[in-house]
Length: 255
Image (tube, rainbow, N blue to C red; front, side, top):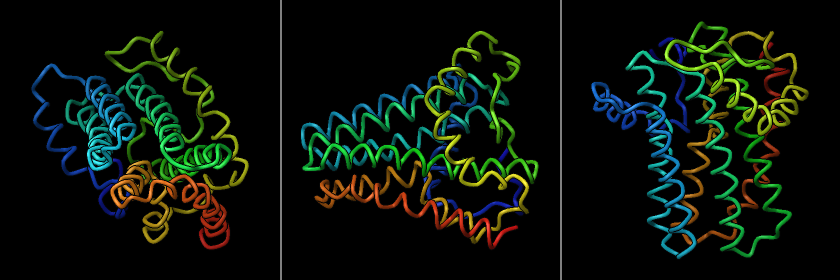
């Protein structure tokens, strides 16, 4: 099942890995490999990318960052083709993303001449950008009856789905809330009326998708290969200002 009905699907700039992700998912459909295994693979890919950055092999770092993005899409695709969605997998995926994002930012700070405060602003900016994108995307999916694994508001641990244990869901949900709760609150405070708005048009969602993690990793990869590692973190710190542009468009052009 796709995340959105066909008539509401938009060109997602952060979702370039979806086709190879589907190929991977289909190839694993009849195996014992689970979406959690694929999530672990993307963690390993991200860690290899970090190691490559530390030793100066930026082309390989870029390749493993792109592979990480593809595998990040493949775990969800595998859950869908196996008809085994799970909150365990969803929270484990999100927690892994945030930790890897932090390690990637720290690594770029270490290998570049970036000020530590700019690095901190970049990390917070990357997370806020991703949170805004997910906030609007989940609202869109909810309004058009798309994929419902993610919820607009998550205050309590959901009831475990078939095949997963409630204890695991509860533990991962609490970790998720600890890591993402402040970002969710900030974005909700900025645009608390968004869930009441009309369906977000494609012309809005496509530009917004530059805030998606896949596009963020693509930009990091391009900068690394181009020898521009020193501007990566300042770029993401400045890009955060676009949050107010998108929120303004949502408030005054999409009611």
